[in-house]
Image 1 (cartoon, rainbow, N blue to C red):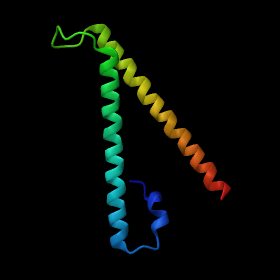
Image 2 (image 1 turned 90 degrees about the vertical axis):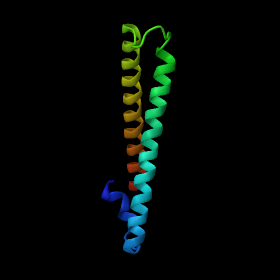
Image 3 (image 1 turned 90 degrees about the horizontal axis):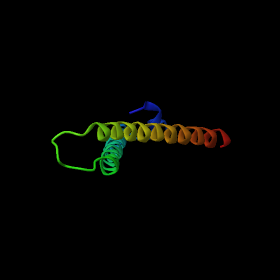
Image 4 (image 1 turned 180 degrees about the horizontal axis):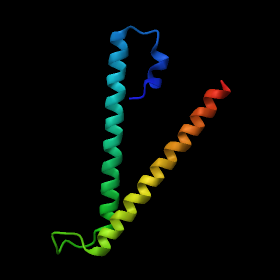
Length: 93
């Protein structure tokens, strides 16, 4: 976790800082797993059409790769935009 996230907790006792840090780490892990599950489910549902083989067909594999790439690019862009807005809000205060 980024230490700057705990900057607002400076007045808390060390025990509370550790507890908050652990809680933030847990929430970040949970959100990462949710994003990964969403990516897998969405790309699988959009790209996999048949279950006649043990492996993906070439067009299914290509579709999954493109889907995952788009999803990750979109997620990065949303994260960057959120950071921009958060930075702007911080400077306005």
